[in-house]
Each structure stands twice: as structure tokens, then as C-alpha cells.
Length: 225
Image (cartoon, one colour):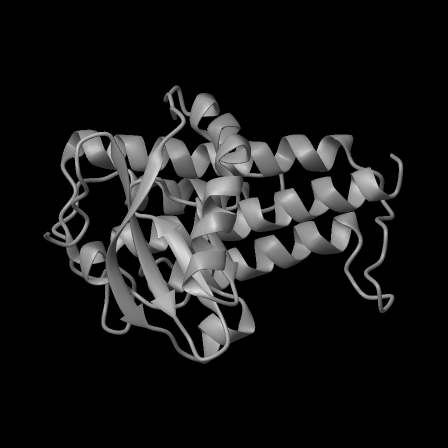
């Protein structure tokens, strides 16, 4: 089966297999990526996150049915994988994007940002700490996400410091610039040397926003907020 292709009615999944951790990603649903210590655990975590991701799909105007998952690609992970980041570009990420596919991709990335904003708006400023007393509070998580996106922008050949200052919320101009790139048709080639292809960029950016949205959500609930 070719990279990115799944059987009828199935969701194609790519696995990034590290020495200590595995990431499973739904190849055509940016941001729907979850990790586990084994391949089976990662796929199970991905399936368990389906209901949460369905809310994101709905924000993008898309319907995510209760799907069956099919692993169509495996790649070796790296230090990023083991650290807890889906950090490897898959062969399927080299597929081109038609205008329609690019618009859909952009809508899902926008929906991931919207989901994070909604969770942040409803969360308490102070979140429950982890079992060892660790974990950022709400505003520090938001700052972390925005800071990471400045780094991601460089992989899309965007220079944040050269963007016009148009006011608005922090990170708004940068996200508009990234979205303009991600919702444009693509050949599947990286945007620059050592840059990212469009499909991987969308997956990484949306995953990071959703991973922290779901973290805030969980730690808000645990605190009784």
C-alpha cells in the first residue's frame, strides 16, 4: 500500500518508532497525533483521542466519523520522538497538496488554534501540578506555544521579525502568515533547505496546540475548576 493510502472507510496512520516512545499520527487529520511506549499503546491513545479531535474537525466544518485506524507507514524515531515530540518527517508527508486539500489542511490548523483559545478562555490561571509538583500554569503554556510557533515559522521560510506589526493578539500576525503558507497548494517539497514540507508542518503545529489544549483541559478538571 502506498504511503498515506488506507483501505475504504479507514483512517491512514503513520508510526514514528523511537527507542523509548512511539507516535501515531492520522496522516490526513493534522494534529491528531498521540504517543505511547509501544506501537499498540500509541495507536490506542490515538483512537482514544478521537472524540476530542472530532470537536476540532467540527470547528473546521468537517465530519470525523467513528473511524477504524490502519497503520500504513512506519519510520524510525529519533531523540525528539523519545522526548515526546512527533519529530520525524514521514514519506507520506512528501505528497503534494491540491488546492482543495490545502484549504482543508488550513481549516484544521485554524481549528486547532481555535480549540486551544477556547480551552484557555475557560481554564483557571493556576492549574493542578503534576505528581512531582511540575507543570506550567495556563499563561505560561500559552507563551510556550507562541514561542514554539516562532521557531516553526522559520521552517516554513517565514521570518517573524519581518512581519508587519498590525496589532491584534500576540502571535496573530505570525499565525496569519503561517496559515497563508499551509493553505496554499504544495508540491510536497520542504519550503527551504532543512525546512518542513507542508503536511508535516501542519501536523506538528496543530499537534502542539492541541497537546497543550488537552493538557490544560485535563489539569483544569483535576483541579475542580
